[in-house]
Length: 289
Image (cartoon, rainbow, N blue to C red; front, side, top):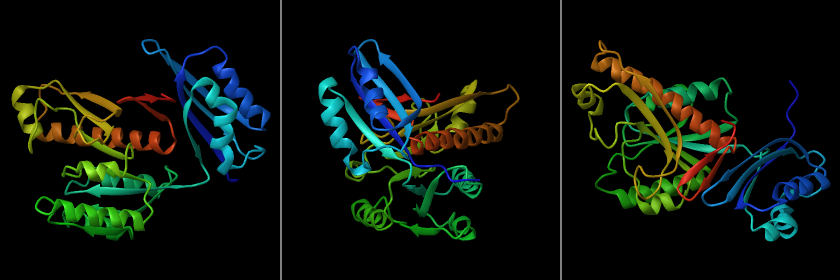
């Protein structure tokens, strides 16, 4: 199978104005870009337009390192556009943080092995040794920081140093049962993806499925979101639910919940690495949905 040529992905948001989309299209086209994806939508309350456009770089005349300056000068300044530009030629590097539960990590490793994602995972970080055999089986570097709760500041400083050494672009919390500090999160703003059940805030704590079972819940849900300093209040990337039957046991709830968590986290990672997410205020604009 021939290799795909490099592509560019442009994400923009700006006040809605006549000629905005045409200006973006004309800029890319006149510089030799072959557009093959373009989506846009509008926030009717704020009158803001969101755009995602993707094009081939093979015949594009502007060097990658000059794109931001040229686009700012020729288009963005006139239309007050805020934008991010990404190029697919650089493979993102993802760190995975785990604790004891294996289901999300195992799913991530499977998708890597079948090359479903164009991403590298250079290391796994944990606060327990439980999942080290999983990492060892696939030759993945595994680091344990066991005294996180009592030594958070020093542990997180060491973790940040490790992430920098491995040139990590973003982090996935694959059921990592620790709260990250505001300082840690600030180093990876909108680059830390979390997954958890959707019982919060009704059933917090270590045994949410047991508590939910006692109340007779009718659905099990999962939510993936970007991590902010305000714990579980970051922009939501992906959510899903599954029905609970009258004869489901607690084990059935856990099984359904964990299966859903894997799927929702997988979709969130896919959307992130394919640059399908635009963050506006504290919410996400999801393209290709």
